[in-house]
Every structure is written in C-alpha cells, then in structure tokens.
Amino acid sequence: MPRIFSFLKPYRMAVAVALSLMLTELAVELIQPLLMAKIIDNGIMQNDLQEVMKWGGIMAAASFAAFAAGVINSFYAAHVSQSFGFDVRKSLYDKVQSFSFANFNLFPTSSLITRMTNDITQLQNTVFMSLRIMMRAPLLIIGGLLMAFAVNVKLALILSAVAPFLFLFLIWIMGKGGVLFKAVQETLDGVNSVMQENLTGIRLIKAFVRRKHEVNRFTRTNEDLRDGTIRALRLMEVTMPVLLLIMNLCILGVLWFGSIQVNTGDVKVGEVVAIINYATRITAAFSIFSWIIMAFSRARASANRVTEVLETEVDLADHLDSNESLTVREGKIEFENVSFQYPGTSEKVLDSISFKINPGETIAILGATGAGKTSLFQLIPRLYDVAGGEVRIDGHDVREMRMENLRRKIGFVPQEALLFTGSVKENISWGKEDATMEEITEAAVNAQIHETIMKLPKGYDTRVGQKGVNLSGGQKQRLSIARALVRMPEILLLDDSTSALDMKTEAKLLGSLKKYTCTTLIITQKISTAMEADRILLLEDGRLLAEGEHDALIHTSELYRRIYQSQSREGNRDYA
Image 1 (spheres, rainbow, N blue to C red):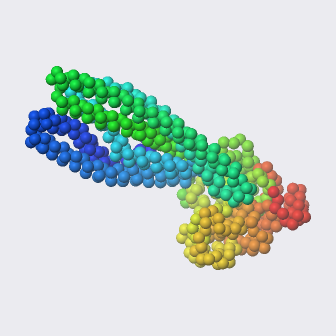
Image 2 (cartoon, rainbow, N blue to C red):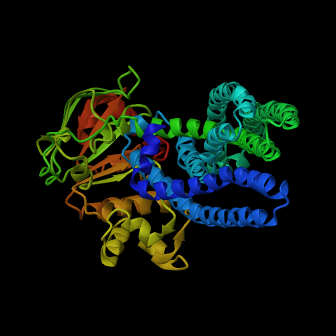
Image 3 (spheres, helix red, strand yellow):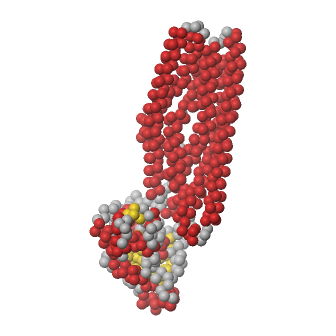
C-alpha cells in the first residue's frame, strides 16, 4: 500500500484542498446538533422566536457553506483519483514493457491485464471516495464523541463505551475481507484467462465443435468467481447489522438515561436531542464503515497485486558498465561454447555450441522440433542471457552493448507472425518509425507482398484486424518480413517465417534478400530453403551436430542425408 499511494505525492496540494473542504463539511455536520440544542433550549423552550430565527439562520448559512465545499471537493477528488490512476497504470505498463521473457513467465497475460484494468480501477475509486467521504466517517465518529462530551459527559459515556468494541470488530472484518477479496481478484484472473484463450482460439473451437466444452469450462471458472465473491460480500454484509444493533441499543440507553436526567433537572432537553443527534450521525458513519471496509479490503488486495508487479526485479538489463557507443556495424556473429537453459529449469536447451558467421553470410539452421533453433535465435538480440559461454557480435559480447543499440540493428521475424491493429502501412513502418513511403514500398516489394497489398480495398491504407485476422498465414508472414526489412538491419533473423509460402514465392523472397548486405539466419524445415544458404547449421538435442554447405553435408552427415532423401521422396514435405 505505501508504494502505491506514493503516486499521490505530485498531487499533495490538490489532496490538501480536497481534505480541507471535506473538513469544512465535517465541521458543519458536527456543529449542527449544537445549533439545534440552542434553538430548542433558548428558543422553543423559552418561546423566543428571535432566538429561533438567529440560530436557524446560522444553521442555514453553515449548510450552504457545506454544500459549496462538497461540490468543490468532488472536483478536486475526481482530479486526484483520475490522475493517480493514470500514473499508476502508466508506471505499471512501463514496468511490464521492461520485463524479460523470464519475468513474463511469472505473470500470466490475463493476470497482467486484470492488474492494469480492474485492480487500478479499484485503487482510483478508493482514492476518490477517501477524499470524498471515507475520511469523513472515522473523523465524524471521533468528532461526534468529542462534541457529545462537550454537551454532556454522562450521556456521552454511554456512546464511548461501545466505540472500542466496534473498532476492534471492524479491524477483524478488514483483515478477513482482505484475504477473501485477494482470492476474488485471483479468480478473476482465471476468468480473464479462459476468455482470452477462447477468443483467440475461436476458429479452432468451431472447427473441432468444442463450443459446449468451452462453455462448460468457462461456467466452472465463472462459478468459482461467483462463489468467492458471495463469500466475501456475505462477510461484509454482516458488518452493518451488527453495527446498527449495537448503536441502536446505545441510543435507547441514551434516551432512557436522558429522560431520567431531564426529570431531575440535571440535563436540558436540547442537550438530550443533541446527544441523540450525535449518536444518529455516528450510527450512520458506522453503517458506512461496512462499505468502507469492503472498498479498502479490495483496494488492499489490488494494491498488493499491483505492487507485486512494480517491485518485480527485471532479470535482464543493461550492465552498468555497458558501452553506450557500441552497436552492430558489420553483423559478424560468434558463438563460443554457448550453453543455455530457460530460467527455473535445469535441462540444457543448448549445450556447448560454437560457430562463426561472417558479415553478409546467409545461414540456414535445420533441426527437429525441440532441437534449440529458436532458443539460439533469442540469444542474438539478447532476449535471454546465456548460461555459459559468450555470444559476440562484431567481436563484442552482446552483454557489453546497450540492448536498445543492439536490437535496433536486428530485424527479427518470429515463428508466429503477429500483426497489430492498424493499416498495412502502419504495420510495416512499425519496424522503423520514420520510414518513408518509398522505404515501406521497397520492403513490401522485396518481401513479395506488394502486389497483394495493391489488390486490397485501400492498398497500404487497408486496415488490418487484430493479429491480422483478415489476412492469410502467408500474407501475415510476408508483412512481418517487410516489417523487418524496412529497418535495413545489419542482422536478419527469420524464424521459420516462410513455412506458409509456396516454393515459387519463397524462391523469389530469398532472391530478394540477396539485395541486402545484412547477415541473415533462417530457421527452416525445408531442404530447398537450406540449399540457398551459404552454409547450414544442423542442430540436434541442443548440440551443433554438423556445419557446412549442402554438398558437403550430403557426404559427411548421415542425419542431413536422411532429411534430404526423405523430403526428396515425399515432395519436399516439411521435416518435423
């Protein structure tokens, strides 16, 4: 909680204004029973209309001042809460953007979305209500008790006798509520996860006729959310009846004892009325506490979840002694005795791999599923750090470079083509923010997607649906390649990104890539693609099994020869 509410520091002045206006409302609310006592004792009981008019006018003026203070307070409270929510959400998003792949493994995507939306909404609503009414409730109880003592000590003692019990009861409820509402938010993560999976895989669900299965799966998760929320709310709902019962008994005690005191002449009627008025206001404040506790319990759970992300240590960052001037200039790549395993696992994905790639070379990487091809790719732009050995570019360990300098010189096309909502032009220029239309067109031509784009309704201005839903697999792959080419990279990494292309289109694409002077690495399952490369690296079970040109490997590597013969017999079928 302290970490989260430190985001309120820039708005200290606005918070102070809002609280001062809230205190103005509170002061009027506390003074009104005294004014009523004056009207009764000095005016009504004495048949003095002038006193009634005087104190009544003061009460009306005070009420108008409280009304004005309340309206202005709402504006300030809204400003602070919305600005606070904006800052926390921005900070959380910036933190997530700095995460390494290992950090992302700690938080499911659905959980991060919930934390950036629902949890932050809970927090900003709590800030707003704190500045508007939450702070008033406890202060009204304390102020009401003090004012009651100022009116009549004996009657006030009845009110003060129950206050400690109610306070302890509320503390207990808050502790229990925090645990329950944390569980509710975690269950909400599960609901969002199921919904995200279903919406992403809706085509597969329909193709396999699994609608009922997925509906049942969502229903079970939704029921867990419903049951958890009901348990939390039931606990919260117990609060108000208990508070009202105790406070109403307290008011009855004041009335009974006060009537005795009035009859003996020790207490004035106005004083009894004032004490009853304070008791009623305290009761109303306590009744608000059930809602306040629920809001704070949810806010505390949400604050802990947001803080958990904000305080997560990013395990992949620029070294303090990294050279800011270092960048990729030639594209020479060296792996020296490189080993790697994913964080949290002990099994090596890559084991003692060494090779050198000269600037401008095209290298094909072959291997079965799980051989470590993609893992090898991810070490070059330093998406992960090696467990042993060194990855060097232009003679420098990649850990010596600033990650931004390193990655700006690399064009990366992942295995799964991912496009963003926007136009075709925007998706290609995503690879280079200041790309001109000529550069965008050239990249599209070389990626063999220009003609397809020109056939779209609005050409380069055609909108691409989320994740490229309105494009075919091959079109998405070629757009992803164009996005990488537009930045004119020194190193181009293609992770099985031509798998959806026919042989003719793929051949044209590989021919176009020769126009670029960059070092190119292509993960592929196709021998026909590998044959176009300068050299081939053959991986098996995380080890570099063979390296060389196609003709040499045919004679020196039994595995490569089997792959070649298999694809030759079966019509160039992908090796998997």
